[in-house]
Image (cartoon, rainbow, N blue to C red; front, side):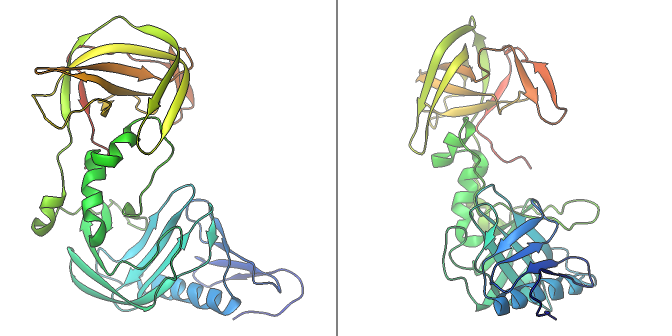
Length: 322
């Protein structure tokens, strides 16, 4: 129930899951405790009431839901993402955001659950289109830890293997979290895991993998420039480590293909292929650390020495582990 007051009003719902702050304007705030915690709602007050009522109603139903896939999901991202909550009895509500934390649209409807490979959303109200999610995906499937729109499976397969246009994000580009990386956040003990459905196995690609067979002398350069199709990057005071890599003649390896070095901190370095030969490829491990021999480990909040690159180390394009 909404109260009409001239001052700021805070409503806390019984479940403790939703907090709405609003004034006489249509500007509202929603505190759902997810990620940033507080989100700006740019909806008319009646739409805001409807959206949050659905969110809480489904949340209450989930307390007794037996379907392990049903639940609360989140696709995060600094600039855009969405919240998704669904149960068999109460249906779904999909809430996209953009501009970091702004909500201006939502969709809802009923759910038809066939099995873990086929969950159908039937919207009663669809999205109007926007910079986060344009329209409600109708069919979803569970793959590994993700709930994936079936219409995005081709991209999901390319992204998980780090291939195609998604290979460039193995480098030092910006944050990138595509819309098909939707993950459950209200699991109790262990994040559910689902094998790839047989009918969708052809979408899942194997990553390119190789073994370092030679490591040259490290050198430092004042600048290094990478130019790709989706982004370009200029770096100063870069460490370059020349390497040769055996890819078992994988024909997918091309000039400028980017790799992670397995077991190494990939947020400060990547392997860039410079030349592809008949037996091996040559390239550089590019370390963007401003000429330092250390990197900052954000998990431990400590500066650590950069580990050496050695013969026998594995490299991969893989972006998702499972």
